[in-house]
Image (tube, rainbow, N blue to C red; front, side):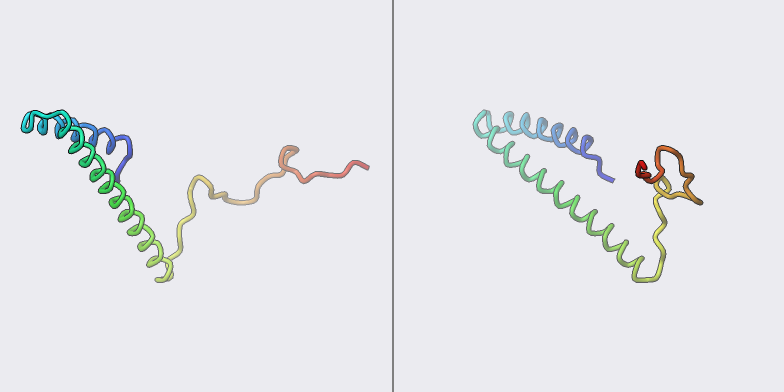
Length: 97
């Protein structure tokens, strides 16, 4: 799984190494800046494509499971077992007569 903060920190580290290497090789701050900016755009594009691939795989697995007749497990945090007790806080409003 790709976690955004880790990916951004890794991309920043890679861009810093790239910028230092480019400056050492070219000796030009201008060239280093524009080449690093292009590298940043390419890295962001790669991250975006990676996220799209992960989302499409997840959607494909979910649709294949539903078409094969599998039941989807309910979310354990939202699943309620048995009747919900009625209290003063969740009781339906009674009109005052």
